[in-house]
Length: 272
Image 1 (cartoon, rainbow, N blue to C red):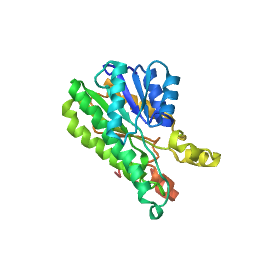
Image 2: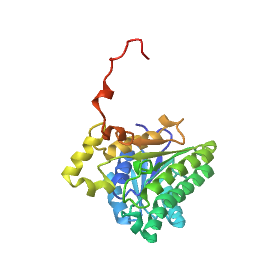
Image 3: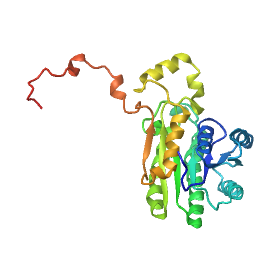
Image 4: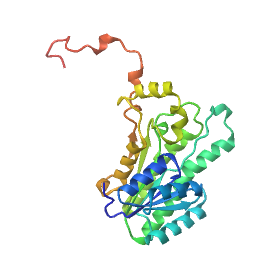
């Protein structure tokens, strides 16, 4: 997929997992990629593996000043006043029952997942507007923002918040030439889920529950992100795309059901 008129893209949380995979895919598709992570060594490793198309950037996305400094470095490396796109992927989770969840853990997840997405997107949008260029912003949400999972603390709430934030940004910034969309990964065998799928039995059972019969990959998500960044999605704005193999909508398929209700053709042919 060609990057079209968009020459550079910033990917946050790109020092590992899904973010690293998105950054690598973007570089392969022809983008100049800013690999941003609060762990500078991790960002450097990923950028080094990608090659000359990547620039390692260090910033904590909850720090507005640090984001601006990283964007200055990216502009110096690319020669562009603003990136043509940004993928707000940085996120964390602190597992545990809500009844036992401390305020510090709650606030940490809200700060990174929701506030960090806002600060990054706002900083890039301001530069796009100042440069007079159109652009595309993609926020990574989660199926847990659509259907929350147990013991996930603030994670599902923040991802639902990011989805609504993306819609609000799309509404306000669309007239300014900036498209904003979200991608909600489902059961993806990458990143935060590594510990879950280390258990072969859990892997098997989860795979069987997905209508497509398999877990998703980082490439599955990256392909959708690249589409939304590209000119091919030029009329897509304010949407959230589930990349989950159909699992989020398949709850009825997991419930007991009598065979009799699935019988067809027993009535009169004229029946509606």
